[in-house]
View 1 (tube, rainbow over the protein chains, first blue to last red):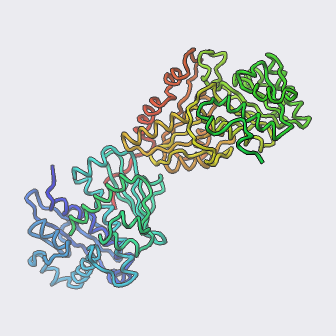
View 2 (view 1 turned 180 degrees about the horizontal axis):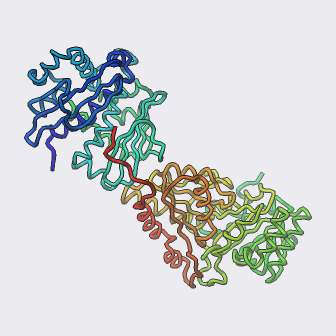
View 3 (view 1 turned 120 degrees about the vertical axis):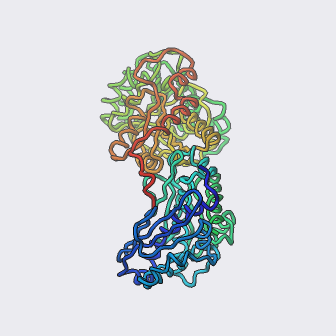
Length: 263
Length: 338
């Protein structure tokens, strides 16, 4: 089944955007403190003609998990009338979930709701135009963005994106690696005969087929904010692309597609 | 200092010459610089081209007739006397007919004898099994103290012959019969005995080739890259012993798929040497060896024989295709994603 633009974006939101909340909870000290003693479940769901889709978050004293699907009796329910409405909220547009669904949580667990809103507000850092206020935020933005994009690319393939599937189908086992020099930021996309999987860290199983290594967090920011194209960034020494230029270029096209879907 | 005008060959000649011819000329140049070099032949001065040296230095050249054992025995004595014998005959005779003399007289005493073995592998295709040398690497690789080199083309042959002078001990250089395709454009690519040379970078698979199969490995890599985007690393493993373990391990870790190609039996040659390194590493990979299977091969043109045993461009492409499909570890849980 071919997914509509909003269905594909919805899949990316639930499978690629929500999971990077973990980065905030682990790397952002203030966020870490906020959730240190918090337990609760948060359901996201959106109506769609092909059936409701959703994912739920579990906060458990600093631990965090995202599970696709639905949980019974969530502590907080973010319910949207359409996939577009949910997607638009994550695109940074002024869209709110159904208040009727959110109201019980506001009455019973207002503290959890406020904390979750702060997390969602924090996800705004993923917006290309969002400017980090300090070095810590810059590090967070680059890390969250690269982690989100690597997972989104895999999800795009799994969702049946025609171009992505055609690109992955004929490839042997390959690693597309991203990293930022001198930091802990590293993630990869593994491809094998039409299958994909995103991972964190430096893949040690084989040499990457393409490795985009950013010189620094500051060097990565303009590339991820789309204020400079990759070719120019390579020319300026902001990023080193080691490996096949053709496949690296195509990967860049898919990264741009993810950015367009989420903005 | 040597100048180009004093040399008996130039880089431009390499395109037109065989490995044997370039060997003869380089040895003649070396003979001028090193008075202790002597040349030994067993009635094959013309075929092995050591006759070029003999023509230039007749008083330092000895023809033993068809008596290879005597020749290698005498080479040991000459080396003991402080001379540097270059001994040339066909690979089949150096490694098999004179086997014990090479082993016991030369290698056992770690003597400074340079064995330039021509007509390696199936390069003397029409000579048949008596003149094919599909076992020489397997036999002589087992001799302690012996360095074993199989240059890929004429330029590399020239370098190997010159560089073997730096080794104080026995060296076996295996070259072909003639008209080996040229790979290198100049001598300036960092040839070093014991260090593989990466001719193509790649991450999908590594082809490790030696001798005259290196040309086909490069051709195959370029075709596969152009036609299907496959990223193929090509290593010219010109030194069989000591094998460049670091290069093999790097290829193993970085590409996880390896194919060896050699004009030699699949038993005991390059493929076996690489397999030893892989096995000792304890790392899994997809691996295959291309070479002559456990059989005596028929008479024929070298090109036809190489095609028959898939050690040419077509055969390498076909085998790489098979190797790329082979699973060697448990598959990922592709749904378990971060």
